[in-house]
Amino acid sequence: MDDGSMKNGDRKGHVADSARAFAERRIGRRQLLHRLGLAGIGLSSFATAMLGEHRPFPRLSPASALANTPASADMTKWLQDVGARHKGTKVRFVSEPTPPTMVAKELAKEEFTAHTGIDVEIDVVPLEEVLQKAAVDVKTQAGAYDLYYLDQSWTPLFVGDTIDPRDYYDRKRDLALPGFDWDDFSKPLLRGIASYHDKLVGIPFDIPIFILMYRKDLFDKHRLRVPTTMAEYMTVVKVLDEAERGNGIHGTTGQLKAGHYSLNCDWTAWLWAHGGSVFGKDGFFSGGDENGMRGLAYMLELAKHMPPAATTWTWDGEAQSIRQGNAAMVISWGEFFPGFDATDSKVVGLMEAARPPSEERLRSPDEAGFLEVPHIGHQGGSSICLSKYSKNPDAAWIFMQWICSKDVAARSAVLGSGGAAVRNSTYRDPRVLAAAKVGPGTTRHFPATEWTINNAMGSEPKLPAWIEISNDVIPVELGKLLSGEYASASQCMATVKQRVDKAAAPFRR
Image 1 (cartoon, helix red, strand yellow):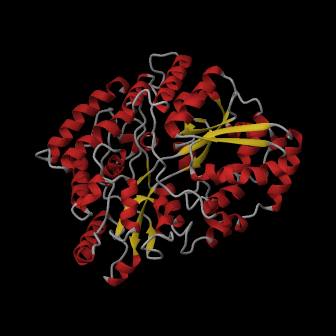
Image 2 (cartoon, one colour):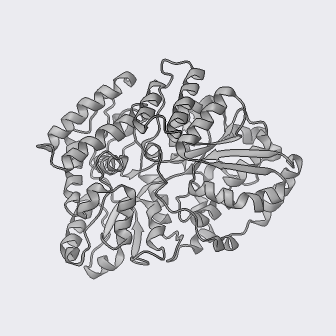
Image 3 (cartoon, rainbow, N blue to C red):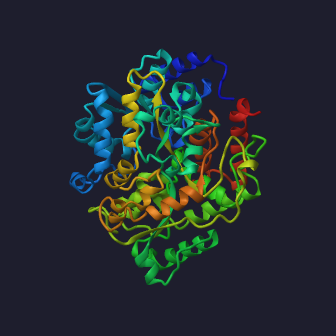
């Protein structure tokens, strides 16, 4: 399914040319997605939505926070010991501006290079340029970059061009970071983001995910308990909406903009939470079955208790509605949470985070299609990968271990303004726990994030047509439903099914 009709080298050249054309604005986003689909490769929809846009989550904590996150003495000694053999070499890493990438860029010169003598050049570019640069590099086998940031859906294209990091760790024992601890990485992330079938392509690097966030002051005021089921969540939304609407506060909020991937994110969460899935195991659209319609009805009911402008918002508007005090709670990206404690927020110290409520029903992955994993905690994630064509693989591997180490991962969580962590130990690190207080860069939401990653992480279908389906089919038709262009929800889903099944047909086994 992932090989397509092109030879592998041709596919990579086609992908590189297409991404370059988009970056130079010679083609539009829709044309790019179509071209990538022809090559049998897709972007995860979270990545697709980032094309030409800024990442919606907070960047870095104030620079002063650096002083509160010093490197450990053991790490410094290891860098000095292994780096001496590679002094004067250069490592190049291409990535989009994720929180861990920006932390690496902040720390590399004064810490990594200072102790190892290895120069590091981190090329931070928009996502489409990451894809283009990586595709060119592997097609030509030039080794222009030693390390790649790869979206989870790119693994079929690059699986043969990266070095299995665990295998490299075992083979290069003289370079191995003591206590690197592979078991410390969340198993769902290793399996669902950093692997392709049974091959480890890279190391988990970044993981946006849905959690529950709510106004504790309003819960206390109305003597409400944090909802733990879907029925309870809806009840609390309605109670808060009725009680606080006169104060300009709606029960919940959303990212329901027609034609935007953010609407697909919300829909899939409610679909999965009611026992549905986008695809059945036969590879046909199942979002309009009985469970799917129950999930859609739930979303439509929630929309009645959101600010009217929610149908025009992506994640930016959704997050701002909480920050400005216009909504009481939401199930959405946990990376929003630190912004609620920012100095320009109107809800500083008022928001709390919790596990998302349990699904009313849950379809197993075996009953879904295209590797879809139904769960309420909708996720988007990426890995850092070592190129097979690197000119300085050992030096690059030292840097990769450093940036993915327990020490730096914990510091990245603090400096990265609360971006979700991929290591289990990060959630218990004293520096991370110390940041779990009201203020910019808070990690108060981390317990909810960790639990959701390990227990309720939902992953979208993996097929090249998904980029078209989740950007130009589902949110377009759902947008029409929300604006009243369809006579009924079932009519909308019938159209979605027709379009989705046609798009998925070439990839159905």
